[in-house]
Amino acid sequence: MRKILELKSLTAGYDEKIVLKGVNLVVKENDFLGIIGPNGGGKTTLLKVILGTIKPIEGEILLDGNDSIIGYLPQINQIDNKFPIPVKEVVLSGLMSHKKIFGRYNSENKRRADELMMQMGIIHLKNKNIGELSGGQLQRVFLCRAIIADPQLLILDEPDTYVDSNFEGELYEILHHLNSHMAIIVVSHDVGTICSHVKSIACVNETLCYHDSNVISQEQLMAYNCPIDLITHGEVPHRVLKHHK
Image (cartoon, rainbow, N blue to C red; front, side, top):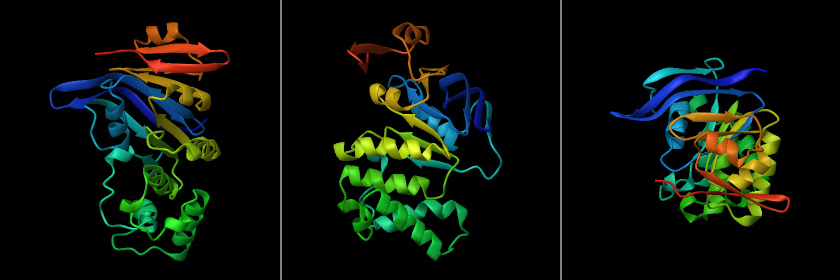
């Protein structure tokens, strides 16, 4: 199976502070990886390294070819929704890295944007400014933006945040469909939901421990030094973060 991304002996941090050390990870073309871990454990730093917004202190980041495309859905609270830009332009902006500067969007680009907005149920909002949208609507808009270029790897940071109940189930149905032709990494505190959908799990807490399954035991989490408590009610597993410093 073709590798999309590989991290080798990665160490990363800020100034003098090391946040991650000795991280090794391979993401292949059909992977659906859920990343869990405590606040301050390094999940955000890991994403920044993969996205190229910070450079590692040590180690290697290998992508499959120079034309590798990564789609990214940030946390909604990181998005400036006060900027006066219409929904359709936000969606199309996902193509900017593939166009020459000042290049115009062609009819195929606009057709693809309309198709995605239709699938997400936001086509009627295409001319509204993003500042007029609810959190769930914004999530739909930025998911369209993240996938309009058909990335090889889609990364979602806390996608359950601000998602309305009507869209939550639909979101994971969409992700399962997308996983047929792209790898996916989902970071979430909703571990119960993640384990219902992903194929594998990584716990990030200063280092990274990879688990090649979506079924994980309390003993394994303790061995990974991942402060998560597992509670099971009948056939439905529930997972909540334990107290951590």
